Length: 208
Length: 93
Length: 267
Image 1: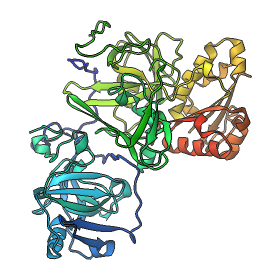
Image 2: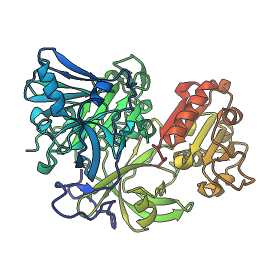
Image 3: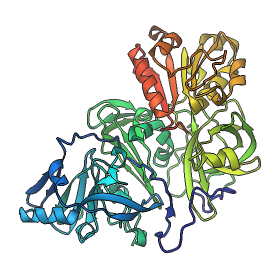
Image 4: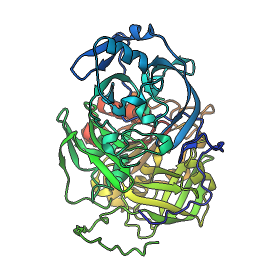
């Protein structure tokens, strides 16, 4: 790496002029919805799809697609921030609050600790503190912009944790594993931050 | 646009891999830990990604090699490879 | 700017090969010329300091840094033959792109451009690798195949005759065909060229087909599988995957079909 990067004359990239205060540090606004994927798009038939919350002692709570659809739903409109520096404002989603699922799991005796590992079709995983998916901050989202969530954006369902960098909002999510100790997921093992708060610019392991 | 339309060949990851290896390894043969197939790294499927590169086995889909650069560090995950056979005499690359 | 003399950092064993330096360095190339190939494709001719040479088919990584530190990085295939002193890239401008409109629009002769390479030894061909050679291009996927054809043209006549080449080039319209004049000058019978235009509404006499590449087209153009041809297929990912599968279906050895996917739009 050279000490002084070479500045490409006249290169700006594609960035909008964004009012101050709404963009986390180092981010740029886009109106696109870039697709980033670490693997092929999984295709699990809805008849075979389920969502599970697995507790510390091996117990788990499970929902079929129809059972998930029967739960109370919310329609959050949120800004999202990708660690690759793009941010998108006012994205509209539909989904079930993770609070609802965790409460139902607790009623069935499924208990956990202070951490969560989301697991997905295709093998993707990502870890977050439990506190970041409770208190109305996270959803299992199956709708986007008034339509069913496209497979390339994580459909049939993805985790949505808009206040963290978007790699935490795991596509094709199939469940949450409750953990007593933090365990790194797919990108976290490769040096990305265990929490990933864009406002504190927690991009990489070691960022405060 | 489907992610299958976005995938590239392992050859496209040659730049990222050259940050780890002292020579071009796209011609090296990698044996998949999932299905046992051996292929040149350049013929794996690359899911290119601004966060890092994931090279998957075209046969079974296993993530064979993963490379990510973060400030001051490049990380290579080889959990999906049981053997990497690297020829000595690689032309300029 | 580096002087081109590399100090070996302390504690690092010097595994110097007669090949490339152990580290792949970013270098600031100078744009010595730009040339419009089509309304959407432009060739950038680069003078790269300490360029170690390349093999036909390889690519470079290009890095653009804006004044505020914003960065973008892409890979572009090399179009020039290894025998040439400068390095030519041909970039197709994608309207919704971020890097290609800059490279194929803003960049001028005299500008600097950060590159590293050459890279990608798997999708590379040398005339000594032999043939017969089958090249299948979709859109700007012709670029690395052009490096192979230019390299082939540099060989002596006897060797060229021993390594016949066929190019099947699929483009949207006649106006999208890159390098047509130069391709027309490559001498038959050593080089055969077949065009198919998938969206051309006015048929042109130099294009043999006006449809997507299919099995019948490959049956007619590809060398018989018994000749053990070496195939290089480059272009948008869906085209490459379809052509590679068809070649295997008509009997080609999968180990001798090399692919370079350019992604969803081929750029």
